[in-house]
Image (cartoon, rainbow, N blue to C red; front, top):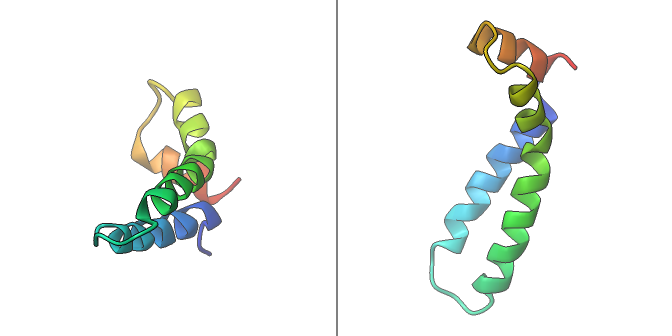
Length: 67
């Protein structure tokens, strides 16, 4: 089962590559991209903060994939 947040993040990374080519309107697209990326990572950041000082990556992975 795929994590929806990680799938959305992968899509955002692919979309960022298109913004690296100079083109008209990329400034607006980049601003939108940043807002979207922040929204997608909010849950992951919250989980990481809650787990500060605990086990490690395995527990983080479990918490992200299994809400």
